[in-house]
Image (cartoon, rainbow, N blue to C red):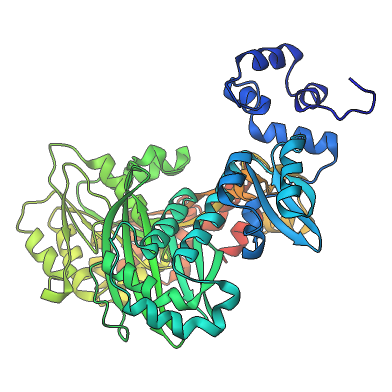
Length: 563
């Protein structure tokens, strides 16, 4: 090889210590037709894509990027066709004058780079990205671009052609459902949401466009903006899916559909809302393929699990799970049902709506349209000889009163309630009109909970806590802490620094001392003081324990407003 000849990928990986020369030789011998050396090494299990990209970045001084954090302009996407970028596994991401920046996982593939130069007439600059990131970006941008093209939308001409296009679109004959570009667009939105493990899809209209946003790990992220001209038909398609009235654009509507995406059963809860800029839609995405799990997989530590099991092992009484919307209350209730579900007991639930169907559990949907409310459903359920009753939510006095009656007549009642802490729940029940003595007699315990984001296991780093972080620990009775996990960001977590969520619990056991205090209408402060004396650990304390364990960060706990 000539002295100044560029290194091959295999040489770089050996120099960086990612693989050995013997492994390179084996990969060369066993690689399939048209398979690159890097792909062969990954297939044989000698390294992963991220290791290859990191080695190339260090050795060649080429910048590594996270394509999930980059917005690519449609004009850049049009520089290269989908067939070429898919085959070459590259992604054009930026155009700066006569310079085109492309993302690749093999910057030493000089024939491909030269081919890009010839196709575009541009000077080509490479940056590094993982193969998975590139594949996702190709699907994300070229899939949408193809759909928009099928819809006849040219983004740069949008303003002058919106009215004309909309008239044509609404008057054109209906296409086959499987071939409609709007159907394809909705399918792409759902597919992307499932792949990103999003819990919600938001379609938000603005003055000249509408935004697609996904809620991932509790945080909304803008996926992309699309021309507003296609919004009416997009909303109509979503309404059709949810069996809603497409002619009514002035009233809020709710719908639901079960579908299959990539072989996984998905439950979609659809809500539309008329706004001054057009109809907004939100789709709650529930992956039904995720199996329900018992308390042992809920994220409780040994102390918390023991207290939780004690609460739900009692034959009667009310166990409430409290917290704001999106704090994981329903997941906790299903975990309890999974734990209690045995042939010897009769379990009946009343929900709005039933989220996950459980074998061996009698589940009932409320229907306000025919006045089949939580309270009315509970009256019927009590005549069905139940041992355990699960109520989706205690939201009114009637439901609260019947729940108390059920607990006092020998039933175990599980439910949720919207309060900020466990102790505040006692006052909420009394405010609903339940006599303090009845609250004390029926209540077994309260579990307050929140969800915090987990630090990414790939890029999270141990660092010395700041003075303000030390102060938070000391303020809440913790000894000085030496290390905390810090969110950094990498391709595995879409450069967020966090991936997944963990629950934080505050478990309040209503023992004899608490019963007496509630009966005597004790103040919230006194109840809290006694609860802490009995061993109840507050939400902020449970959260800081998770920080000490390296699961989350102080920032996540502070965002909950618990300190």
